[in-house]
Amino acid sequence: MRKEQHHKGWNEIKTNDSWAIFKIMGEFVNGYEKLSRIGPCVSIFGSARTKPNQEYYKLTEEIAQKIVNQGYGVITGGGPGIMEAGNKGAHIAGGTSVGLNIDLPFEQHDNPYIDSDKSLDFDYFFVRKVMFVKYSQGFVVMPGGFGTLDELFEAITLIQTKKVEKFPVILVGSEFWGGLLEWVKTTLVAAKNISPEDMDLIHLVDTPDEVIHILDEFYTKYGLSPNF
Image 1 (cartoon, rainbow, N blue to C red):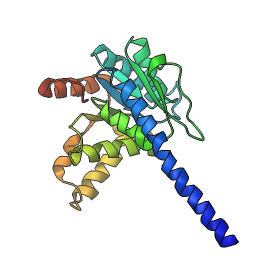
Image 2 (image 1 turned 45 degrees about the vertical axis):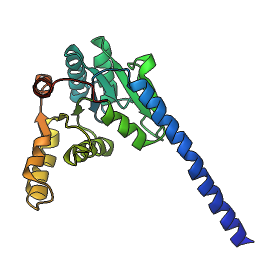
Image 3 (image 1 turned 120 degrees about the vertical axis):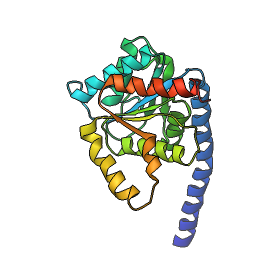
Image 4 (image 1 turned 180 degrees about the vertical axis):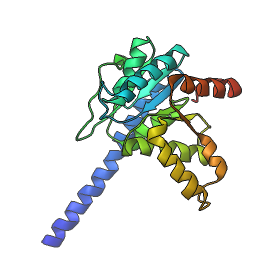
């Protein structure tokens, strides 16, 4: 009897896994349909825990405004902290403000600065990550935690392996990111686990004007066009 119950439970799990495919497809279809209409955007990543009175919140808001003034929209993860600051800056500057929200047990709730028709909800991290890469002309990476590191290294890996077209990956905050980049140089490059030229994929800056300079320089060289 116990064995039969075990098999029954296992079969139910397998059936649920199969039906999940349709939910995943639905998230992809909805994301593609909505985001294919937004035009060139830059994604901003960073901690959900950064407070509005903190330095990097204010810096993110300023960067987002300057990004909009250069003709781009802004995409964030849709939540609080750095994400809210990015959407707020885009909103203040009158630009496209997109939020790719994820259902999490803590931290995450959508912020009020996302355009009402450009707020998307995801259950699956991997679907959401596809949307970030597919519909972004660049990544601006502010100080953050595991989620921010995940997005950063996924983007670098996809560019390094030529799975996506090259786009600017800009880290903001030398004090925060300097130690990580130093470790990459002295450990990963030294061990020949990556090539020295792979470091060229990453830019480290401290000011909004430096962010804009890198975006402008890249797209003056390659020509700005949506990557979809």
